[in-house]
Length: 450
Ligand SMILES: [Zn+2]
Image (cartoon, rainbow, N blue to C red; front, side, top):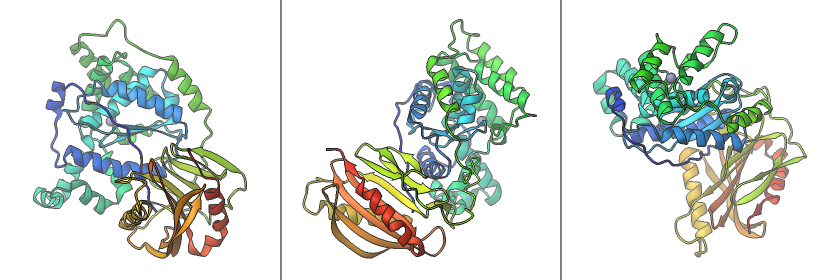
């Protein structure tokens, strides 16, 4: 089973000449960047351990927005998103289209807000300069020749690359930057820092610090972002061009220090996922039995309880709950949920109160799932049920399990003013009896906002 992620919007920013100088050969369109980045980001969200700290994500988003306001995107509106990853390695990455993942280790290693802003400005510059798909273009062209790649892409660049590589491994190709791309991101990042009032030296200072510490603590960051020569000198040159070191440059904030303390106090995740993007480690056996203690989750449209030894993936109205070992890599390289529950709220066209609205929306929802899960079939239903007093539909489906063999999916759908609320409860068919009562308890705990 697959689900999808969330996004925030942003305004676009004034154009800067630097972007013209740097526009590189790229057979993808900015819209491809967004589509491709979103696909990979959805898988990354499913596979990387989240900090599960909404305040930290909000802080990163706010800091990111300050920088985006000064980022020259050539008028393209990217759906920027910022996620805190619960991994202690010093790293961050930005996917095409502006999906930014920041390891807690990076926040902890930054001495002040300006240094963190420097790394974000560098990452956002890779997005604005569209380095991911530019490098992918070069890689594909070298392998196949330009004519072939032109035909292959034919208006659907993202799709072709994804089909070929599998979504999550496409991430690797999109994040392998050249040294010249690094210099460009440093230069634009310095401009963005300068324009947003931060100490423009902070970016170079942070990289210098990582470089100095690399023998004891080799930072993951340099494996995706190779250190270009004369990095610090190049940044200093840029500051001179911009008019010299500003007198009143912002270095730190109370919010940064508070965020750093909050991040330092987060428990580290249990190790069944790796944080470096190499995908989940296959679990040793079936997941541990669900706990009989329950944790609470509050979404916009409902609240729900789930076993407190399960983890929550995703956020807001698009969230999954799964035991350790419940999320696995599918045969085609996607993240699949073998055990657990996916809850989503899907906007429905038309009036939620209309006759047959629930039936129609449910049918459409099943059709969408079948597109992502081609082996999925309806086994039983839909039949009428009530969930927290609301009329709902119950449908049983079968599918191919990421754990191998067949899986049973119990789907409950309810229509609400926010849209169709769907609960997909999944387990391998052989194990389903062990989970049935847990799924029922979770569904019983659902409370819709009145
Ligand atoms: Zn870089």
